[in-house]
Length: 257
Image 1 (cartoon, rainbow, N blue to C red):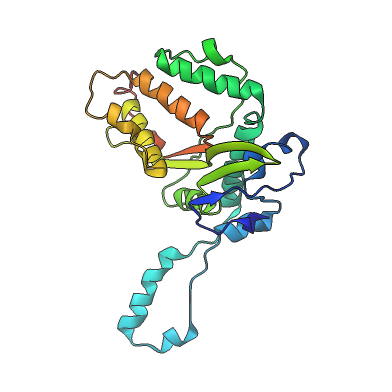
Image 2 (cartoon, rainbow, N blue to C red):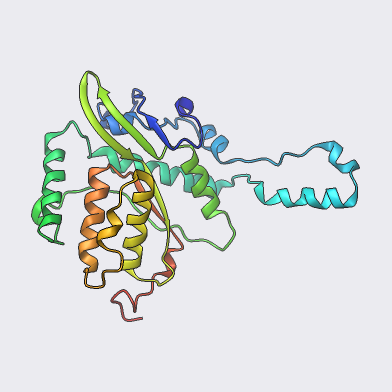
């Protein structure tokens, strides 16, 4: 069922698939995702063989050397890449498990979080409680071992924006942003990271949320973090991938070192 959407799709209309796990059944946000049911589905998503032709060996030296520039395109997943891909996919599924738009309690929490942003309150638990469940983690590895390539290839198999209309006869008009990938800001600050998030959200949706924060030095970082939380919740963000997160500077972000 992984192939129900074309690879590298950006925006698609939701296609719902029955789920084998009981906790996932009846949740349109999960049923609209591509179904990775076998390891070979993930392997085929990650692998990128070289477009090698035997006749190229008969070309002159200049052409043969030019063919070598295709080598960086080659990607054959190792076990660590398979584990990383499965981790990203499972994180998306887990994040949606308790976020069912048909659940009244979840809708109440979305509205409460909007109120939280309106009142510039950074303590979300006062409004939505403390029983939220979401997965996360840190992937650490040597440079050039394929972390970024693996993440990009996983994301290529999941449409970034899924548009919902009707689900089993019920209207659920909403946008589902399954994944968002941003680079750590050059200045190493949390505020810069928040700006990167808002810029990427605007790029995906065509909105202009960043205008309220750009070139405004008196905007508190925690206000931007609340805005991020509202966006992630209201637009059903599945996973946020931050590349080169080690570049966050603790000293500039309120830390000691």
